[in-house]
Every structure is written in structure tokens, then in C-alpha cells.
Image 1: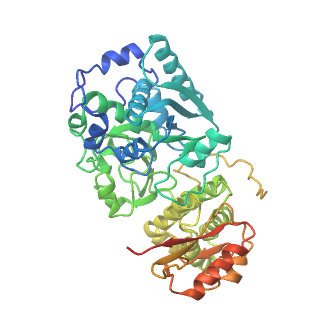
Image 2: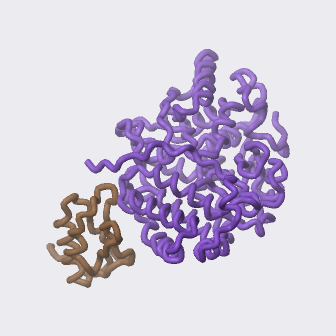
Image 3: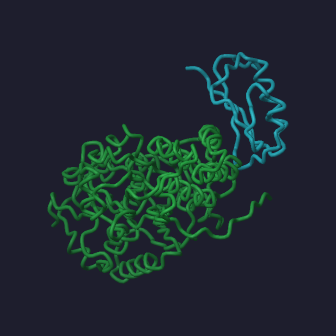
Length: 425
Length: 79
């Protein structure tokens, strides 16, 4: 039996050596019996950990009310954010916790099938899931029918409609969904799609109850969250933290630079946070006053010798290339933002004009894509304009900061593949 | 029968995936649609009252005139 106050809940065990099914059954042994799993889930106040922080119980209830013969639970382990390792760390520690959570969700909505989607570019995670599924089959565990699917990795491939589109038609492209909340379907079967970490939390709630779950965390963000800390750190780390911890404490745990210039929170579609707000607790309600969110659980520390303008430009350039090129404002707007940022960053003669144009284009692009990809980039650029206002002004005056020439980067950006051509038909 | 109430509002909506930036909607409904620098429509986000018959008429022209059939009118009745 796990103790209530004990912190490693999700990452119980040792990363890299996944618990076997037998070990998992004895480690997470329970005598707790929930009267109604959905009510328990509702009482726990669990929110989705994939970035949007949508209440999991509300989503499950919506799916349960659907009249569909065969429903499907999809576990999203695509981990689109290039600097995030939390999902694969969780799968290499406690894969059965995730599968168990998916089985609980399946029993709540009445699904017979569970599909675990792992990026095929992450062979370790694929192997861990495959091994865990084999163990379950050998042990004769009851529950839904599990299936492993390996989708190609792209930034937008982990978006829920893109993932379902891939499962349907082998195309990792987001879909246009005018009605919200919308029900995604695989062929005719309604789909409940949840992040890996959300599923693991569901398993914990099902095993130990909502009251136990709420012993950690705040009232609005209960439980623990996984966070990847990279940037100005000795080595990137995945930590399990409690939302009431301050950012400073989390940076301490990760052996990060104690005096960073700024933090990037939530991933590449997230936002910058000035280092003056390091004593803010790591939950959405507290971060909202600075325009930031927990997002996909990513903290990138930008050291004092980095340049916010250059880092922003690198990220936006990569994000522009990761666009699915379906919607005009995203396909043309994001490269335009990247060009503007490059002009400002170089301190070229017309950089003051580029800065003005950048602000204008942010307003033009916002909210005009089928998915939230362009909105995320716009939010990221706007937060950079806010946090690095002084740097942007000096860059625009033609006096780039020294850091931009040091060639030292903090935000890891994958190598740009050959730019995809615009294909129209 | 056959009478549509003129209370409530409507929105012109575009499916951005279908839209290829032909620009016909801007020509047909200039009061509802402006263009960005790449030729894609920026549609007025505020609701338009259904009593504004001229706007509703041009919105219908835009819906019919779209070569990609990416536009539609979304009526929201007042409650």
C-alpha cells in the first residue's frame, strides 16, 4: 500500500527498469473499492495532463453519454513537444499504471478497445509498451482489448484530431471541428483520448480513491504532475512535483541554474515567464496572472548568457516548419513571423519596421487555424515580446545584445529537416 | 410557414483547411470579410444581427460563390 504523503506516485520505481505486471500488482496493491468510478473521478478533480488541462471526468461523462456501439479509448503517448520526456519516462517506469488507467476509463465509458499510440521514433517507449502488453496477455489480465499503434512523430501528430485522423486514414493532419466539444470517431466508434500521464492518474484514483489523490496538490490542481526541466541545467530531468511548489523549488530539485533570465513554460506553444516571478506556485491559477500555463509540463531555463530574441526565433522557425500546411494563415503566417523575428534578431536596418510588422501579424494569425498550432506560436511570440521587451527594443535599434553572438543556445530545437514543399492538391 | 424570424444573429464561418484563398468572399461580402496579406479571408468575429438583410444577403452570395465551398452561415437564435 502506498502512503498518502509519499511523493513518487507516478514515477514509483526506477526509470529505465519498468515494473513487471507482478511487481506492479504487489506495489500498487489495494483494498479500496470505489462505488462509482466516474463519481470518484469527478470528486478527484483530475485535469488532463496533455496541455489543455480539461477536466477528465467531464470528458469521460460526455463519452459515456454517447450512443455508440463500440467505443474506443486512445492513450496518447506521442509526446509532440521535442524537449519533453515525461511520457516516455513514465512508460519506462510504470507502464502498467498507464494501461490500468486506460482499462478503468474503458470500463467507465463502456469501451471494449484501447489503442496506445506511441511515436515510432521513440523505440524505447514502443518496446516498453509492447513488453507490458505481452505481460498482461500472459498473466491473463481481464479488461479491454489492447492494441499498440506507432504513428510517425511530428509536432502536430499528437494533436487529438490529427491522431484520430492517422488511426483512420494514416494521415497525421489535424481536422476542422467547428462544434465544440466535438466527439472524435474512429470509423463510427466514439473515441475518448487521454494523455499517458492522465491515464496513470486515473489508475491511481481508481486504486486508492479521490480523497487519497487530493492529499497532494492544491484545491483546483490536485495530485502530482510530471515536469521536464531542461535548458540551463546540468542534464535534463523529469521530476514529479506538487503544484503548490514554487518554480524556484522545482529548479532547485532539478539542479538548474538558480538565477535564470527567464523560463519557458508549457513547451513550444507555451509562454515565457520573467525570472522575477520565480516564487509563483506551479499551477495554472497562479501562473495565469503572468499569462503562463503549466501546459505539457515543460520548464526550460534560459541562462543569463542567452538571448531571448534569438531563442524565440529558433523555436518559431522550427514550429513554422512543423505546420501541417493545411490552413493559409498558419502555412504562410508562421514563416512570416519567423522572418520578422530573424530581421529583428540580426539588427538589420529595417528591424524597427519588422518589429511593428511582427506585432501586427500576431493579431492577424491568432485563432484562424483549424487546430491550435498557430495560436500556440502567437502566444509564444507575444509572451516573448512582453518578457524580453527591452531586448527587442535594443535589437530593433540595431544594437543586438552580446549574448546573441555568443552562439550559446538553451532551448533545444531539433535539426530542421528539409523544408517540406507546399502541396496544394 | 415559410417565414423566418429575423431575431438573433449570424456568423459567417470558414473552414480554414478547405480555403485556398481564392478571395471571392471578399469581393462578394466586403462588409464581412477582409483579406490578410496572403489572400486568406479574415472574417468579422462579432455576430451580425439577422435583421441586417443586406449583410445576410451578401453572406449568402459569399457562401455560394466560394469555389472551395468552405463557407457557411451559422445562425444563433436569441433565447
